Image (cartoon, rainbow, N blue to C red; front, side, top):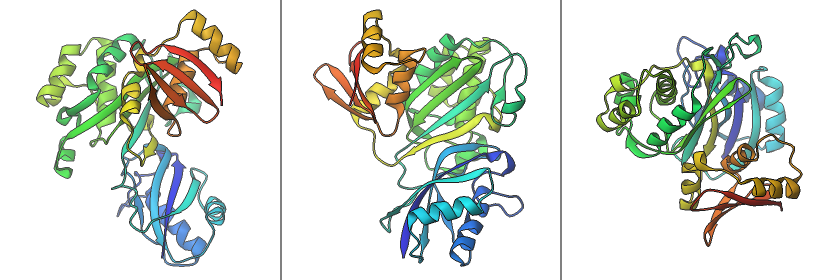
Amino acid sequence: MRNLKVFIAYNGAAYHGFQRQDNALSVQEVAEKAIGKLLKTAPPTIYGCSRTDAGVHARRFCFNVHIESRIPCEGFIKGMNTLLPDDIAVLSCEDVSADFHARYDTKAKEYVYLINNKPSRDVFLQKLAYHYPYPLDTKKMNEAARLFIGEHDFAGFCRAEGKARVKSTVRTIYALEVAQNKGICEIRIRGSGFLYNMVRIVAGTLIYVSEGKRTLEDVRLAIETGARDFAGVTLPPEGLYLNEVLYEEPSDNANELLANLDKLHITELGERRVRKNLDLSVQSVVEWAKSQIRSPKAEITRVGKNHQVLCENCRITVNASSFTIITAHRN
């Protein structure tokens, strides 16, 4: 018996979440039927890393499945992508130990909430982003975002019926930041785990802070007391993406840097140095560096007073006290 670890991406607009439902179409049902057809067996049970709500998307969702077939992983990927509908794709497949479980072995998850912040609807983002046509104060939103970082009881950021599903509502948030680029606002949150509707409520709370409907003190009270009234509205599902699932514990160095990404900055001299070393054409060196640091493949270590970030094609040096990007070089 083999145990396959599979990563998929899916557009969740047509599905009632990942988990199999009795009366609605789910990603799990479609994937299981495709595996059964590929292997010419009854559809096997697959075990997903998360439930995900109806209409929610995933950029990298993991499941594991036990099979008897000797099909190579490359053949599994190609065969599945032939059989699956256009809104689901297999990204990778590998053999893992028999005791691996996609849900119970998860160490951290990262979600992104995408907001179309342009005055008019974007027809190409329908069901792929939440349309919010009013100005967003990302500075205020990031001030509030910093309050979530760390280990807290997030009972105030969970849908009521979701609390009965879990033994504890305590979770650890490693990083939370808001970025705006050309009318698209992205709220990115990484943590040890998330409660039912938690990310959508956190995103709604940050919008309420931008609007002045909630203050930083309200956010503190929501976290400290667990009172739902101090938090914001639950945003719609179409803007939510499961962005990444991690199966290794983030190191303390990684946690420290990820928790302080909102402080990351660069001097004019440092920017000239980085652009010269890497021949970067991107508009913002800081945003580029953040994307590299967030990558699950990035290795973050501490060397003296600096964080050293080893990425796929480069290494970045960040001052551990001021969070200034000192330099970056190609590997």
